[in-house]
Length: 264
Ligand SMILES: NC(=O)c1ccc[n+]([C@@H]2O[C@H](COP(=O)([O-])OP(=O)(O)OC[C@H]3O[C@@H](n4cnc5c(N)ncnc54)[C@H](OP(=O)(O)O)[C@@H]3O)[C@@H](O)[C@H]2O)c1
Image 1 (cartoon, rainbow, N blue to C red):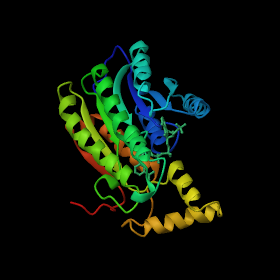
Image 2: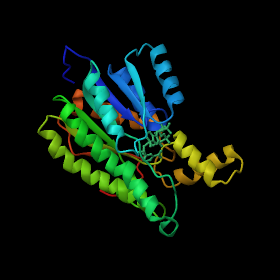
Image 3: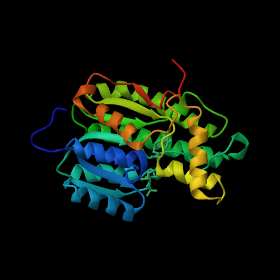
Image 4: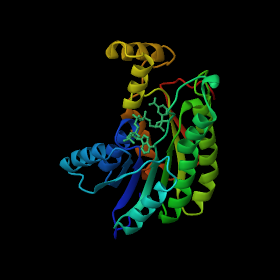
């Protein structure tokens, strides 16, 4: 990474207080970036920043924002412009689906909401923040293997992530004119707080530990490496894409799924 000696490089991570986003924050802080954490729950944000500061990562800040809201990007822009940092890395990680169901169980609103966070939010963040990034900037969008291999459930989510991938490929060409690389990372099944909550909810209040173990056993049966991934294992790949070593990679989608995706 070419560091402007005048200012410390800044990494923004959305969805930063749990799961993959939190792991990305830790890795990028270890790489020497100042960090802006974005999520909704202010208490969790405060607690994450306090822990980072305790570890010696003093340039960590937060904004409590809902990335479903189109205006959130403007608050982030204002913060960056008023900061003393160089925006260098943007990790668009906030995403997912509020409802998990097969096609007939999903309303138009479920589809709109899922496209709002996984597509429109990512489009806005890329479009609005790219002009604030210096050369050797890095944009990393968190996608999903379901973008390429939709299953029986959650067609709104897999279609939204597929649209996100298409946009990432497009935006790599736009970013190139600024010297900024644009890539995505597609996790398979990762044991995050979000995944655990989903498993417990699906079990309908049955024993939480048993529900989690059942979920792990069921998911890992389809994974060649026979286990779920860890948030850190996704964050390492994000950290690589943010590093000098990935300077010539743009428009790529890197899969982190224990071998689950069979497509060449
Ligand atoms: N876990 C998996 O197996 C898996 C697989 C493939 C892809 N992914 C993708 O990886 C990303 C992260 O998933 P995860 O499993 O790590 O999630 P997670 O454990 O549920 O954590 C979600 C994080 O995002 C924040 N967040 C949620 N909604 C938000 C919103 N509207 N605005 C701002 N922040 C928001 C949450 O904090 P607040 O609630 O306080 O906002 C939290 O910090 C998503 O894009 C997901 O689609 C995950």
